[in-house]
Image (cartoon, rainbow, N blue to C red; front, top):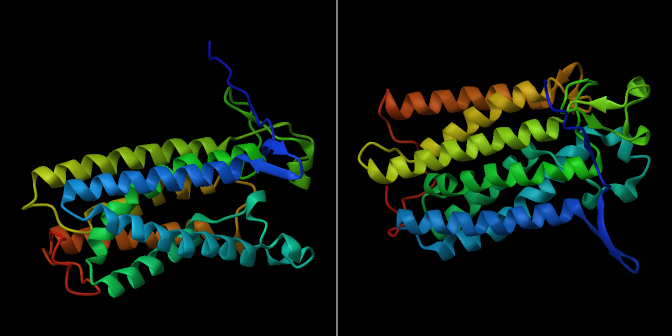
Amino acid sequence: MLLAFQFQSPGPILFEIGPIAIRWYGLLIASAVLIGVSLSQYLAKRRGVEPELLADLAIWLVIGAIPCARIYYVLFQWQEYVRRPEDIIAIWKGGIAIHGAIIGGTIATIIFARLNRVSLWQLLDLVVPSLALGQAIGRWGNFFNSEAFGRPTDLPWKLFIPPGNRPVEYLNYDYFHPTFLYESLWNILVFAILICLFFWGLKQQERYKLGTMTLTYFIVYSLGRFWIEGLRTDSLMLGPLRMAQVISLVIISLGVLGLIWLYILKRRLPDVVSPYSKIKN
C-alpha cells in the first residue's frame, strides 16, 4: 500500500515584525546564493583558482541574474502586470524565470571574464553546480507561494492548492502535481552528476575539457525541465508554444553539439579572452 504524502503550503510568510514581513521565497533565494557562493569557492580552491574570484563573480551574478529572471517573467505575463504595474518589482511575491536568470547570469559572467581576463568556461564550470543546487533550494519558494504547480492529480504525493491560487478551469479540483518538488529533486540529481564530473576532472585532468560541466548541465537540466514543463498549468507561452520547452530543446541541442565538438572533434571551446594565469586549462 502506497503511503500518502499530501503537501500543503503553510503560506508565503515566515514571520512578521510589525509592518515587515519575512517571506519564505526571499529567505530561500538568499540561502541559495550564500550556499552557492561557498560551494563555488570550495570548488575553485580544488581546481587551483583563487576563491575570491568567485566571490566577486557572485555579486555580478546576482545583479545580472535576478533582474533578468524577473524581466523575462514579466514580459511573458505582460497582460497581467500592465493592470497592476506596482507588482512588477514585487519579486518577493514570486514570479521569476530560470531561463531569464541563466541569460542574465551568462551575460554577467562574460562581462566579468572580459574585465578580469579570466577563462569564461572555467568560471562557468565552477558556477553550474551551485546553480543546480540553488535551483533545488529555490523551487521550494514555489511551494510556499502555492504557484508553479501541475495539472490535477490524485497521486499519493499530491499538492493541495488554495482556491484563490487555482486556474479558473481547475477551480473544482483540490490536488495538483507538485511540479516544484519534481524539479527540486531533478536539480539535486543534476547537482550530483556535476559534482561527480568535477572530481573525475580532478583525477583525469588530461582528459577533462573545460566546458564539460556547463554543457552537461545544459543537457541534463533541460531534459528534466522539458518533461516537467509539460505538466504545469502556468507555463509562459508564446502563442501555442510553451517557451520553457522550446528553450530547453535549443539548450539540449547546443549542449550535445558542444560535447561532440570537445570529445569527438577534439577541439577547444572558444573563450572570450586568453585564460587567466592562475586558472588551469
